[in-house]
Length: 266
Image (tube, rainbow, N blue to C red; front, side, top):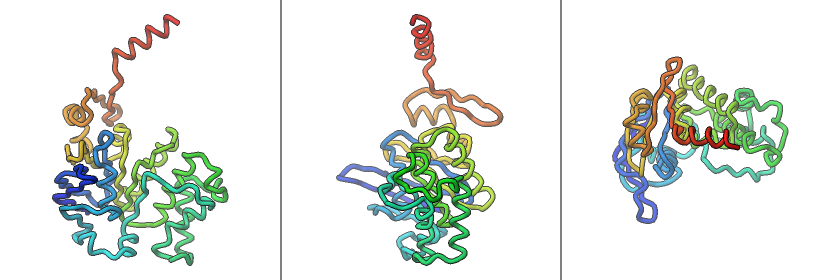
């Protein structure tokens, strides 16, 4: 379990996170949702010790993150940041091998190679494993970076907008893969995501943030409620249940009608 208590973070005298108290359950897929500037990426970065915070505590399995040695933390927790350095002149396979560095220190053993093969297969990258990153599309590069993170083989996997640049097919594949890692391998997955329907359909739990404050953190059905989403996004969101899944409808009906009229007039 990851436990965050009384967390405060400011950047240039602006409060980015304000008194965040939340628990992330082990073996679950938790998504973070909220509008731009809500503090989602900052919260993810504080949990992974990429950035400091002024007040509060963060614990992983009862141990303060400040008490972990860097290499020990890297064996327990992996993060994929939102911005990746794709100018590296390396192949997809070489990138995925980077995920094994906390374990291998650059000298790959059989176990390391097995994890690399597993990640390449899981993300459907075998056909492009020998291609250089600079020759790939944005979506292909994104999947390669996700594979690198999974190859690290940690108990906790934190991903900041992993669906960036992905089409619908590969977005679904990524979320299905993360769902399977949580369910079958008891991995604890935390994903910052903008699409609330992906959050609704694939999450166990959801953390909803707005303006650096926690709006609600609970099971997905507790968070996917009209009143919660109205508070979160300042707009009306209708919720329909389809095959047991709560689907959020936020396309403006008046706009849709006007588009239809416009289409018939052309």
